[in-house]
Image (cartoon, rainbow, N blue to C red; front, side):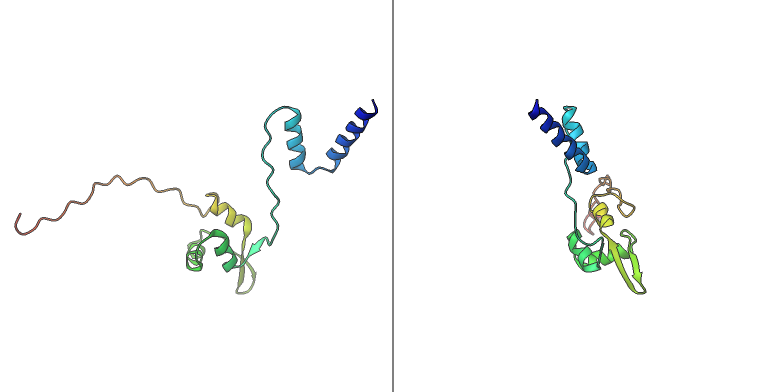
Length: 122
C-alpha cells in the first residue's frame, strides 16, 4: 500500500511540473494511443542576419537576397537600414509552408519542339 502511494505521489508531482507537450504525451500513454513525438525546444536567436538566414536555408547569399527581394521571405527592420529575418519564417519557407512558398510547377505537357527544316528538305 505504501509503494502504491509513493507511485501516485510521484505521478502527481510529475504532472504538476510537466510542460504541455509532456502532459499530452503522458495522456496518450495512459489512453494506450500513440503519442506525437516531442519536438526539441530550439534555442538561439529568434531573428537572424542575412548571412545566418542564408546558411540556415542552405543557400548562397545571392539566392537568399533574391528570395528576399522577390518578397518570398519576410524581413523585420530592427533599425533604419538594418533588418533581420524571423527564424520561424525561414523554417516555414524551408518546409513549404508560408506566404512565400510557391506551389510546385505542373509537369510540362508541351510537345517537344520539332527541328527546323533544312534547305535540302524544303
